[in-house]
View 1: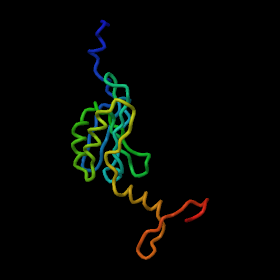
View 2: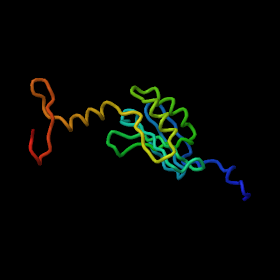
View 3: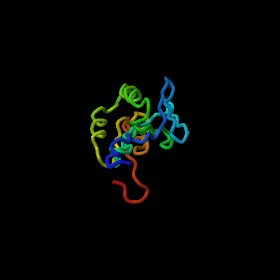
Length: 147
């Protein structure tokens, strides 16, 4: 390899490609494993950046399911990623500015660019108790004094 041979190397593809339909998003990784998430189950979209660029993959889209465990990891260099991003940008509540900020990051970080209302509702249920006079009441930890 020549002294400048590393400049000719392109980013290593971490996935063969990403496709989506009206029902789901699917990614086939380079090891042949397929990851799929249904649009109905999509609860959060995040952008994960690393400090390994520009010669290694350093931007990933994280599509997370309602259970917090299921989903897809989509490397930015994946075939079809640009089309997927265009589709994600059409979702209500998508934060375009957060994507721009995340894409300019050169450090390890995760930025949430979409959080569905169902997730926010579940979070609210965990931090509030039953309604009294039509207002949700805060819940308190078991230990400690209640105000």
